[in-house]
Length: 438
Image 1: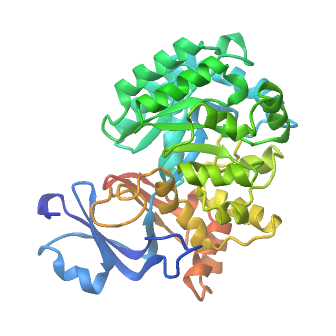
Image 2 (image 1 turned 30 degrees about the vertical axis):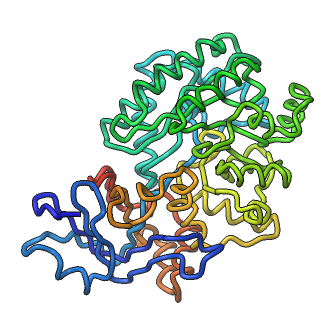
Image 3 (image 1 turned 90 degrees about the vertical axis):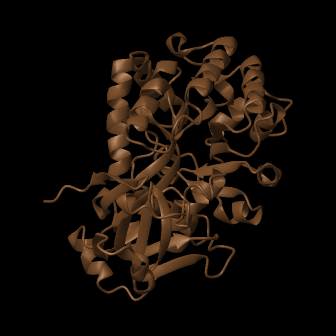
């Protein structure tokens, strides 16, 4: 890639990124204790040791000095709901009453595009503050909610995926579309936003209980008609929900099988939660390159269950981490790693910090079929990255002062870090967030 001096940017810090999954490949990461990241025209030019790359810079190039800090690719959150920003941390005894009591009434307000844009702006501020540069986002049933979201993300130059919820039964009348209107409005949004700048569209049936057979059929038809779009939905989150799906679809082998019957298992399909799957479900996800968005803070908050990393890895399911705001209780992917580690321990497995950082960066990009575009510092990838500060809190500073390895350092960030650990966030080579001092 030719370097244009007028657009050249260079950043000196410790650098970490991945080229493989640490669970299956030794030396899956690249680590440069004194590194240099070179960016031009919003893309990565090179990443490596400062001593080797510094001489390749044109004379007089300004180097942004982040020594003492760590640069990693921007975090990628593969499942969250921007209309639920206002109702995060709402009490309820389980998923279904939580939806009825808080979610549906809150989403009603997104019929108003001014309200939708206001929440979208705050939502994106929170993501960037937490170091998340790409997310797969649910709108409300209202197409104007998606227009508001993409308008806000486009103005910031962000790589975002979003979609209008499709929902034509088992929900309040004020949030109900029809099979025909849901498909028509989704197609109009695809044509308006998909691949416009850095925006990507996701066909978004909320979950099986809220879509009729006709709507599921039309959503599957859209997925076939637009194979390079995304598809996002929920599956096997909660045992009550699973029983409800069995009652609605007694002919289906499993909850996941309902989606399969409508042609929704495919590359770029992202299924939230995936807790109560069986071995055939996991094998089918792997066969179809469908991906799982693991949502530990949400699953613990709603008491939904514990994701089984060991069985998912045995089947080689594509995995990623997600906050699931507002069932999830934090926008921070560091806090999400914290809870993912504990979920793994409760299921009898162990999740190293290297693996957690992989799942939040290159692992998520692979799950989204975006390797080569996002997720690491390979030359030509989009320059989305964050600067992590181990001095951001007194406790983190004290703990990291004694770290003897990269694994210890990353584990401290994952277990003790939050939005305060993110000193700066860059998207497409542009600084889009700087942590306030003091």
